[in-house]
Image 1 (cartoon, rainbow, N blue to C red):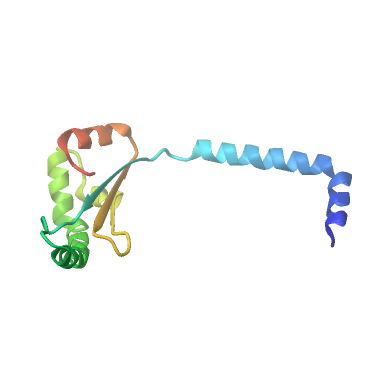
Image 2: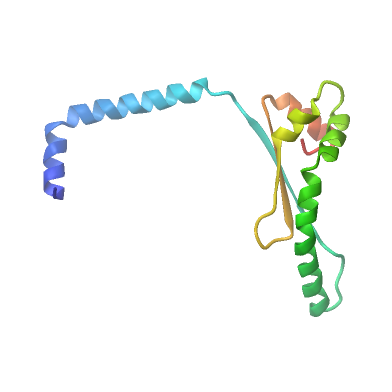
Length: 135
């Protein structure tokens, strides 16, 4: 089928194409309205080894920080960190649920930790931000 054939088919059936496009858009809009809202907060931390006086020290320090960030990633995902965050947020916060709403990642070849917390209400995030927690 060539481009010319496609244009002829679209000209012959333009009304069906327009109606299906509108129907698809309406269905997509309706589906998004039925989905639960999810609020997210994101923070980042960079791992450093302190001030360096030479380029060699800075290079070694950067390599060391990149090697250590994987360990910090495991610690950040631990249950103890979730328990501490739940204590900071106060009564009524489930440690298991809190751990499930927090993701910690490390972009490849960087000394950066990214923390993202999600929740069903903005109130939960407002409480966590006031207390200085990431969840």
